[in-house]
Length: 342
Image (tube, rainbow, N blue to C red):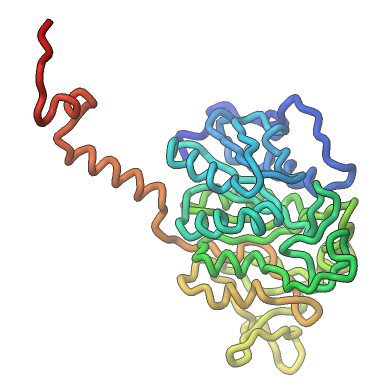
């Protein structure tokens, strides 16, 4: 927003607080905060016009490490507080920082309703598929069969798919990025802020202590070319070494094809439309899993819909204009009144 920018550009380090960062060495959170600071710098945001709201978990230390306004709330309630902050001051750039346990377990109800309402704030979800702060219990996104301290014989639950949950709650902006790609994270964070409505960015984040390399099949250097599909609006869905592979529709199903084989050309490859009104293809991209498909990365959905806080504020203004009471004194002095004489 124009009112949130500064005339003298700030550098990424200007958004860092004077607090010592105390995440474990090698934690993916360092890359995420680096990307956010880079994005804020490119967006030229005023520090005093940014509010960072967090819940509970390793990720939720984020507000302490940023030289902006911040609120470290309680477990699962960051979405409720972020909603209140945005409604109280619509001019603020509000960022909610949360983990997969914080948002999808105890905070699940607030999470889906913030998305459904399409409140204009940004939610960065750190997904390491484990409870890290409380020392390694399985979370709502842990893979089925995962052996952890709270599931010594393997989990018997099917995990949430964050993207499917977002679209099921009528989400209009959903992106997925790995913590190993700061450039992509920065680009996606910038676009999240530009979007009007709730923007959710899921970061596949590595917990080096309790779930190390859980995303390695996707993010490792030797795997990423063939196992990541970086989506760009208006561009062909190509991936693999030298973009030799792509996606096409075969009936109602997605199919991986190789350019040059069986007469396949780039004309056969799907073009990504992040802004499509229908989310059917977006949902299909989210559902792709290894080894049959690459994992879709980047902005998967970026569509427009009515924004809750804008309509809420407009409603208040309308009622103020229609009201016969222009002040609290007008209200108190209306109707039957009487005077007390000494």
